[in-house]
Image 1: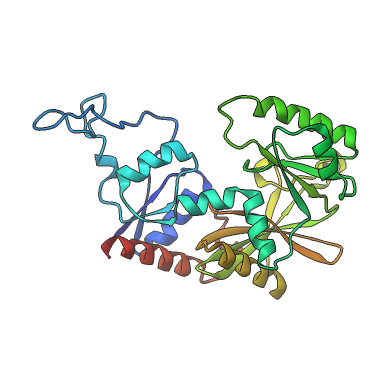
Image 2: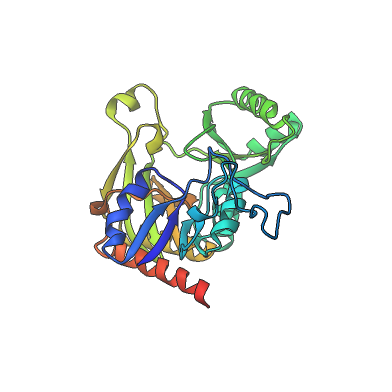
Length: 310
């Protein structure tokens, strides 16, 4: 049976285990974060402890042995480089796919160049003077969305109604970006699409395989909530997306050359746009996808594993 490494132990791991096992793929968890990872034994060789021995004397490499492929590269890139080296397997979505998808501005620039519809967006690279922020915001109509360029799950995303509010949010971003270890010191200004329908389309190996609509409860809307992230309380309801949305999701995955991709679509006032992508997408309940979803996913995993043999 083919062995697949997954570095997430959350919902996706539990949901895919049985369907993939039915297709000859054993899914096993490899912990990539919130732990100690042996990196080197200081050059010990010739009968002395091997470089993989952990601090307790056991062989830390054992847990990484005999895998054939990985599903997606670990979310934390620093730890991921060690786990990637220890596993020594190809990934369905490797480091490049994860990094590229996480860069919201880079994704939107690539899709815009390919002629795909996206929200009007400007990247601001800190530090900049207030005059630069004001000029960058001038082409937009308020309210305007402000979002960190590489955060996930809606973290740090805000809507502002005027220039003073925008500059206030930027003040907080400046404080965060002033910390020397902050990697990405950029953020986006993006047009706000009020009352937009929020969809996540899943694309596997170039083909649309299912979608969900993310909705808020009436109470959440009444209280002023507008973010549709599931991790912030929204519900993902299975939907049968139309041909335009399916085609747009497939074109986005093709443009980015990512085999396993969640494509976030917004629909408002007759417009359908790609808002973001996710190369580490959560797999929802099977009934929310097309009948061939797991067959196609298994085929991609097998093809990826074959790369190791070649």
